[in-house]
Length: 100
Image (cartoon, rainbow, N blue to C red; front, side, top):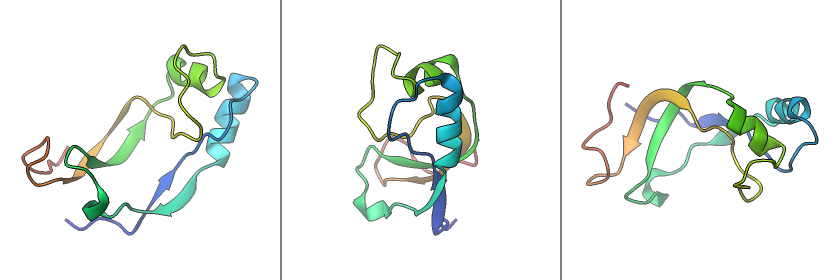
């Protein structure tokens, strides 16, 4: 199955003062971007087409910079998601892409 040409990404570029402002900023940051070129990925990388994602309490803490681990900015939020594996490196962590 061919990869789509583009995908959407949320990008956190700064920590918010409140959880509500953090969620609003993430929603406003959704942008189209080209899909990565599989030739540029490492043997341990996989591409997943995310179909569903949740916002957990930890995500909210990270948006406000209150979690004990602060990711370097900018970062893409989301610790829990479900989707379809679209690409794996030959000889990588999975034998082949799976339907789910």
